[in-house]
Amino acid sequence: MKKYTKLIVAAVIAAIFIGTFVFLWQKSQPKEVLYTELMAKMDSIQKTTIITGKIEPRNEVSVKPQISGIIAELMKEPGQYVQQGEVIAKVKVIPDMQQLSSAESRVRLATLNLKQAQVDYDREEALHNQKLVSDDEFEKIRQQLRQAKEERSAAEEALQVVRDGVSKSNASASSTLIRATISGVILDIPVKVGNSVINSNTFNDGTTIATVANMNDLIFRGNIDETEVGQLVIGMPMKITIGALQDMTFNAALEYISPKATESNGANQFEIKAAVSVGSKAVSGVASGATLRSGYSANAEIVLVRADNVLTVPESAIEFSGDSTFVYVVKPAKDKPEYVRTQVVTGLSDGVNIQIKSGLKKDDKVRGPQIITDDKED
Image (cartoon, rainbow, N blue to C red):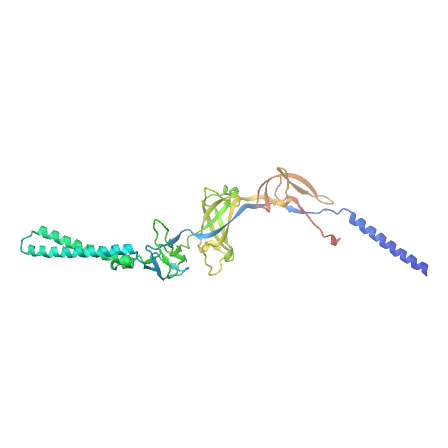
């Protein structure tokens, strides 16, 4: 009995040994290398570039006061639409003491001159009634009285403007009323009621009461690298994408390329501007009720070069060797495909597919990347 047990154990050990040997021998055998096969076909290829920038109105106007003073009332808020000439704010004048004193002195002097002119007129009128003064002389005295009255009226209006910022005769065109200089949307009102403001003069730019822009005339502003700017032409179409509004997309046309570069992070960049079409036909993917806002970040896609109806293959099938390019053309065989190394002339590439100018013809099959198999399946 013990003899049979030993034989069985020996047989099991031998079987395990032989099985292990066979397994290791199979694993050590070289596996057949398999490749994908790709078809040469007619297609269109385009090379594009993406430019990062922002959306902004073409014309953005800063509304500033014509006089210095304090904001007494704000009639509008940011986001509201205003017509040209519409009142945005009202300013309470804080008169300059020197100008006020001068205006008051002018009124006093004009009053004295008027009194004297009235006395001269009354005396001359009495003499004229007695035929002692000619009509010509009397008319001169009357003219002097008229001038004296006009001078006092002008002096009083000047005093009202200095003191109150408005006179009775020009109340509708008062400089205390800050009006929109263009029609558009109010982007910002950086002042509050009670803030002091100054008018623009030789020494400063003045206080901005509001910023107004026409949001129906927008441009895309961005920068492009010097390696690509040479391929741009005025009028080239662009596709503008605004990520903040669920990939809101517009058509645009390139209208400006800066003649001078600016350095950014060690690279030369050229500013570009493109007119954005905001008509309903130019927009795609727009959320209902979406509103364009000045300063939105956007990406512009420009097609730099395009080739239509050309022979193409996936770029993964190309072998680069120095200045030459090759593909492995698939030749049918009995056991397995045969790959023939063939030189080709390439053209435009979009990073996925590449143009073949010569060396291949339509429907030729070429070798692609190697098929990677999972060892566990063996």
